[in-house]
Structures are given as structure tokens and as C-alpha cells.
Image (cartoon, rainbow over all chains, first blue to last red; front, side, top):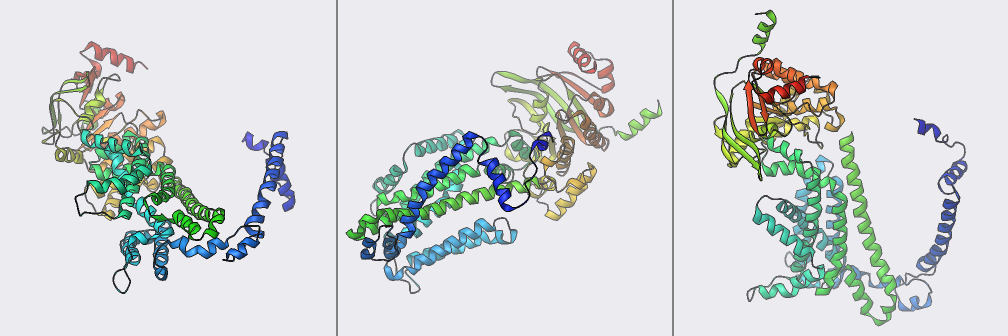
Length: 367
Length: 261
């Protein structure tokens, strides 16, 4: 109460009046803040106009090298001219509507699942949606029957490949990571040792190594004649790697749930898995939403590393486009800026969703 | 015999002669530390037992062995005719009949009060949701807290939470209830509301083992009071004999300490 009494009365009057009051209170209270405010404004004034000038005012969208060489700003024409190569990689040109449609379906299912999870009427459709959606996406991408020509997955590339690798990565790494975390906490020595060794070994090596092992070493151990698809190997490598990190995140959450919660479950005769599913995991996972999403974001960006084993993800296709014609090569800033913008858009959406999810879950408990 | 004692005898049904818990020569160690030493205890159906003793005497550990929250290394425990050993089926069977109320309530914070109560009936007893809800509301009314059914545990006072915890146990319709210092974590003004519920249960003939220092409760409802120290049962007697004429020096010392204020 006494603190409230000290606060100045709410500003009244005109909008400008309120803005001035706000600025005085937040930007110019004391010489130090005034200095910081002026310094920041000067810095932004120095930084932003040239960027706008380069990216918008002096830029061109025209997809020709001639138009680009005439302007002093950004050559978005490079992206414009190579858009389909950047988006879909080496997927046969006439068939590129298929990855486009597959991508739209995938994004649609993801958005419906994430947004609909709080409505029971939508929630019951989430699993059927994936069960139907994934085969449809696979059919569109591979084809091979019903009039669609077969497209080998070594031709897949670009944004659909990035999205497929990361969404399937998340869907499988999540439960696998959870099992590893539970295994590490297990009373059974063999299971515990196995989980610890797995987590520590995988965490201890770079993803590049895991991908190399999956692509070069792993086939050496297979019997003659047995081959496992390169894309599948990369996908498994990503899942294995992410699961090890997630396992440690989940373990943190499990440790934060009080011992009494486990005991309460036991004393009500709930078997281990039911107790986990109904009592422990809902609490543990809620606690670790921020680091879990952190892992997902870093995994999403790490999918770009598949380029080293010859798969062209979204960043890989940008490089491919830059090399497609020597005349375009000097517009790499535009190419990477475009790729960065798309990556940022997706990662930022994940971060925003995580914040939303936390808020939603808190709302429940404090109602 | 005064009228008062007659009503008391009326309200408190004497336990039957049927044994529901048998503990014989039970020993437990934590590493090298001998926590429970040669425990022998028989509990009859409908009997109300209060266990007291200084902290670290093993009283909580003892009742926690009875639903296998703690393992023991030597001896035998039989509950409701089921041998309590490593067999998971047996453990789950025993836990369906033996419920525990904890010092820190251990309600599930992410569920409403009603969901806390219906969880075990639905998932362990396979009861239809509607029926489980009715059962839960019935017991919430019993502990006089039905109006809080849709709140979350964090929004309730300690006394209310403990009453919810008792109702949650009752929803399993247990044959035996274990209370592990149910009032120790409560503010003083909330102790009575929880004890009142426990007294009612005792009068209905529930088999109860209660670790507590509430000696008024022991005098009012207990059939036997057990005093433990250093992992052993030192003294076991009816409340009147226990409080008026303790035999062991350690019991006398303990009683003088806790009854002096």
C-alpha cells in the first residue's frame, strides 16, 4: 500500500501528454538513462537507414542479372529468379507442385495440432490427422503410383526437406528422449548404465560426426546387399542426437518433481507407467518447456548440417542457386539474408508458441 | 461407569478379532544404519493405533513399510492375508486396500481437487467417470469441503488440503488407513479440522495406524498406543495405561517432555 501511495498519479490528458510523461519516466529519468537513450537513438539512426536503403529503396526484384547490375541496393532478383530451386532443390521441375502441397499439408497439420491442443473437440483429431497426413505427404513426395511418377528421395531438397527432417525429428526424438531420461533414473542397473552411456557418448560428439557415422561408417557394418537410404540415415542420426539432449532436459524436469508426488501415486496403487503419465510427466514436462523448445530450435537449425552428406536442405539449395550461374555468385548476401529470414520466422514462431503454451498452462492452475 | 465413558464406548466399536496386519521379526537397514529392529506387531480389523516417539525413532519408516513405500530386509509382513515382498502384483494388491495420508498432503498440483480424488478410482478401480465423480463428491462432503471441488490444491489452506488428501484416500475405499504425521505441517488453528475428520473415521470403525504427537487424539480414539525409540517398539499399551502408568523409563521421559506444555 505504502508503495502504491508513492507512485505518481496516472497521467491524464492528451495522448501526447501521456507520451511525454511516459518518456520522462522511462527514458530520461536521471543523467545515465538520458545518455543511454540518446546513445541508442543515435546508433539506430546510423544503422537503420542504410539497411532500408539497401534492402528496399535501392533494391530490385527483377529476376535478371542486368537489372541487378544496374542497382546499388539488394538484388532480390536472385531470390526471385531462383525461387523454385531454393524452395524445392533438385526435385523435378514439373513435379514441384507435389512438395509444395506436401509442405502446405505438413504446416497445416503442425499448426492445427499446436493451436488445437487446448480444445477437446480438436484434440481428438490430432492423432488421426497425423496418421492420415504423413502417408499423404510421403505419397506426394515419393509418388510411384496413382499417376504420380516416382521421385527418388535423393532429389528431394529445400524447405520441404528441412521441414520433414525437423518435424519427424521432433516427433521421434521426444518420446525417445523421454525413455532415455526415465532409463537414466531407473533402479535397474543395466538399463541405467545403457542410458547413461548412450547419452554421454552422443552428447560428447558433434552432430557432424554422428551424421558422418550414419552415412559412411554405418553401411560398413551392414551385411552385403542391405542398404539403408541416405535420407533415412540422416534422419535417424538427427533423432539420436536430439534425443540425447532432450533426455537431459527431461531428467532435470523429473528431478524437480517432489518425491512426495511419486509416493502419492504409489500409495494410490497406480502402476509405474500410469503414475508417470498422469502425475509425474505432466508436472515435469511443464517445468521444462523453455529448454525443450530451446533444443527443438537448435535441432531445427542443425538440420542444415545434412548438406555435408550430400543432402540439399533449405540452406543447401541457397548455395546451390548461388553456384548455378557464376553471374549470381556475388549476390550471396541476398541469398543468405533470405534463408536467414525464413529460419528466423520459423524459430521465432517456435519461441512464441513456447511462451504461449507456458502462459496457457499457468492460467489453468491459477484460475 | 459414567455416562460419558458409556457414550464413548458406544461410539468406538471394539476391533474384531480378525488380524489384518501381521509384522514379525521385521528388520530394516539404510546401508549400515539399523532403522527398524525386530518389529513385531499385529493389528486387528477396526483397530486404531497411535504410534509416537522422538524424531528419528523409525515410526514413519515403520508405517511406510506397510504399503511398501519402504522395503525391509528381514522378517515378514502380511497385510490382509497378502504377503508383502518383492512381488509387484502383491504390492499393488496391498496398496489398493491400504491408503496413506502424508505430512505434506502430496496432492497433485496440476489437477483440480475433484480430479485428484477421481484419479485412482478411474485408473486403478476402472470406475466409470460419472460414478467416480459421484463418489468423490460424496467424500468431499464427508470432509466438508465439497464447495472447493473445482479449485486447484494451491488455492486451498493447509487444513483444507489435508482434508482433500484424506478424501482422496477414502475414494479408494481402503480397508486400512495409514497417517504419517498428518497434522505436523499445519498451522495450529487448522489442526482441529483435520483431527475432527480423523476422529469421525475412527468412530466408523476404520482400521487406522497413525503416527502423531496429538496425544488428545490418542486418548480419545486409540485402542493401543505404541512408543518407539531407536528403531524399536519400546512400549505398547491401551491409552489409559500408556499415559497414566508408563512402564519404560524412555516412555516416561518422552511423555514428560511432550505433555509438559
